[in-house]
Image (cartoon, rainbow over all chains, first blue to last red; front, top):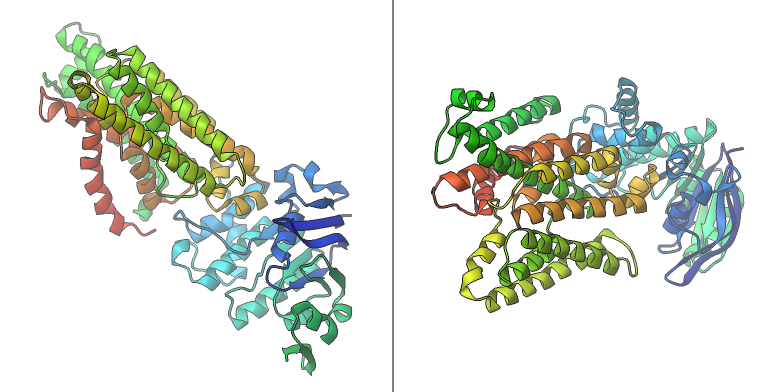
Length: 254
Length: 323
């Protein structure tokens, strides 16, 4: 099965161990939230799971094959990453940027086909960017850029979506719309793992949660098991109160 | 400009390239009309034919090759370093070549030893910069800093050589530094290297589009970033080495041509790489024609002309670009 697995995975940055001996399987149909303080290793974990950074110890496997044994291009058809930031030093249009997502599916010589463009336009429309296809990326707002990056990931259409703070810069409506879309993708058989900073949003849209403490300790389980006042208080080193809202639990900082 | 579209722009560039080559063939101490050009090229023997085939054609094609090499190397270097302000010389290749060439000129030799000195100097710089940039964290910023520092070092060495040089070779040394196509010789080598460079970089044009968005995004979308960067570094450096060896340090072409085309037609490298070759070749051919005719029989350094033509064109187009 197309599971993503961490086997005794250890993450370290500049000699500091952030996460030690992580044993976890991410299965199709699951929507995971990744929670932790700033600098706890959320980005490092996502990059490592995407195969873009060698682990300090252990290994990551996809389809029961270590990531290191995959060809980069083949892997990109299965694993997709939404980076935390997107650099665009060179001028480019919105449509061309979304079309980059087709790269792993097309040969080096292929020009963009009508199908490619249709897929890109559909993804842009899904991210509420219809009508901006010819706009220069440099003239987008922060939130529009973020949605464009998500649209590129949707065009890539991987089985596993790794998202690094996907709702940065998004307004309320687009936040809800994006998280709803990720939930729907998981329900349709994709696997989603996204780092978030709001446990209430995680409780509402995710079924599983991975907590990274940043000192090597980690905890994983269903959202109901993990999202408790006690766990979150320890995770953020700040008291957290749970109240019951109209759509489930809401976590309020003390 | 965006409304024009890439195919139309490409046809326009092809037309301009042909026009610049024709103008280069027609202009000189003896001005030839189009009809005379056609007759001479068609095989009618005479003075016109000798002038064309032995003097003007090699020089025009040589200038075109050097311009194409510089613009292509610049486009590649900008992606490698993730910086639209990068040019072919930013990593010190031309500095190394200049030190090699000036040393040869200082020893009082001319012709092939100068060319060899320039090429060896460029190669030494390529190997040095790459070797030094491999230590520690490998990032575009690290490579850029290493190259910029090496270029500064070469610059100091050039000044030492100029200071110590006796008057006799000094003029030749200064001309070499400003870019000089009078020694460009047979254009075969330059055109061959240009074709090879385009052949080696075009298959990676799609990958370049991704690398231009950052190493992380490129890797996540299936580009083997480490291998591509090595390939880019070697290709861009060797193209620069060839250009500098043939024509000295000619400024402006390698920085502004790719930049200008990015502004006009976006950063799709499947278009940008061949378009840069055409536009770079055209600019340098036109500049060289002016350089040898404006103050004839006096020849101006061609690098001065590339800037004189390029700066106003660029400044005119910059605020009109929609990108």
